[in-house]
Image 1 (spheres, rainbow, N blue to C red):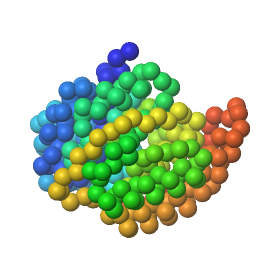
Image 2: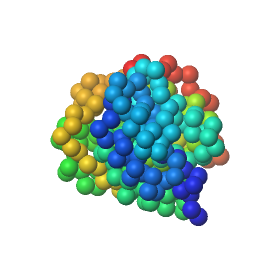
Image 3: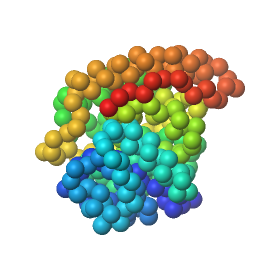
Length: 250
């Protein structure tokens, strides 16, 4: 089954004018539709994305990666797409890995397919590697499911309103928030090897403050985690109510 026509790439961006054109061009070799969510950029990100053939959704001010993804998912659904492939706009993710996501999606029931960088993490900056391993191990213990890479933004998602409504994190907790949402819907979650390229450009990730923010998010999600563990220990229960959780601010 060829799923490429049913899938749209959703790329959240903030001031990625130097890289976004190359990212869009490379992705369009595998997917016909690309949606760039310009998160209040002050440079030419939107213009260069449009010139490269992407649909652009502009947000008037920076609201964070998680907020951009939610808006992108809603837009993709309104365009008639039922699958979204998310990746970063800085060129860190390689479009050559896209066929691996499509193959797993076509051959399994996985509603969430996450890129796994930890099979060969050596290129990853040391602090980010330590931070990612800590978050992955902590969330694995909290959910009772082995999660090798919680934070990779390169992933494929089955688009449903029930999934989007469960998302509330606005910053880099968004990737972990998506994993919890998928578990609440009792989706199968798969992982596929993903290669990442780390250049000399400054990263928007700040290991210490973002880890503290992530831990606060995890604490706020404790009731969701409890329900997920309970659901996983029982049979016949497939979904949970949308959690009443305050949105994290940017």
